[in-house]
Length: 254
Image (cartoon, rainbow, N blue to C red; front, side):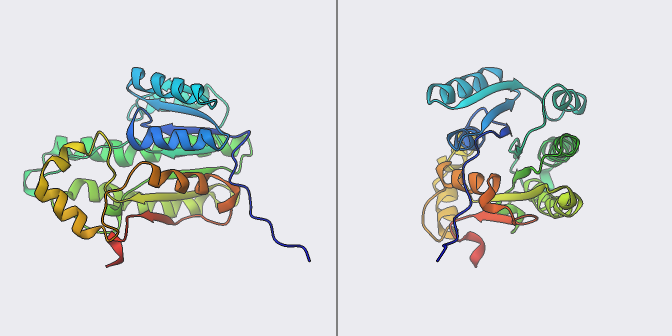
């Protein structure tokens, strides 16, 4: 009897792009893809951070390079994709948050969050997909969403707006690109301990309220997301598109 064989989780020979890769989740996902064999480009506005991240991956015998890129500059995004071969894997991780009551939100706040979290993700994906199609690459698009793209949250109106939009946009991407063999999915984490979220957890009441909703009783770590990214990037998920892999410790199970 011939047993089925598990499709490979390896990414050897594939080029990957991770935006917002200077630290936190982005750096962790870049490391995960490199550890699985991909040649990873770390992109961000913070040149020193992505250079350091790429160097650290190289020291661990991974293939990595740094590319200075402001994903909100659409001309720069267009030039970025025109100047290099198409990627097999694109991880849209660049994002921001401005927690505040919706009554306090200004137009500048709205634009800052939605322009980076949503508009930039759309146009990075568009350029990446065009390049994949041009080079006949059946690629994987991974968008870092949030559990806040599945539920609401106090003082998170802008963040929720952007992440719920990512979920709907992702499903439409999957439908538009399926004929080209290009898959599109999201990873939706709970609160992850990173430099960006660290200030929030200096408030013990906030920390307590978060841990009450994470049924597994702890904050997420970057490592909790690394396997999800490798899965969605690899042949192991070849029939997975238009969906969200929710990594939230049970928050949205209620």
